Length: 63
Image (tube, rainbow, N blue to C red; front, side, top):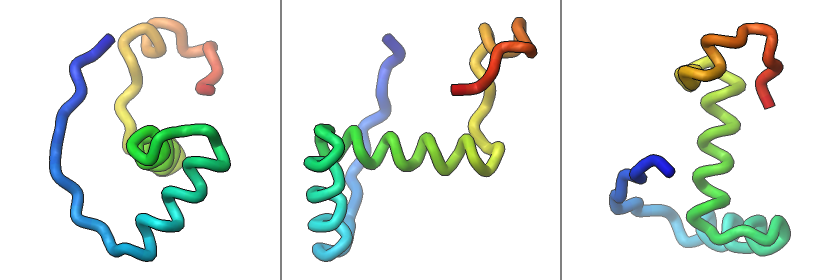
């Protein structure tokens, strides 16, 4: 598993509360929910670099 970068995130209380509820609904931790949302947004915008194994197989659909 790849090493994960740690950093401090300051966030509005109302946003945190909404994320907390959403994460619970999806059975995730708040950290996992934020990572999921960021990953999804990056994929949709085309800003997430492809993994090396995905580059080797261009016919493989992106999840």
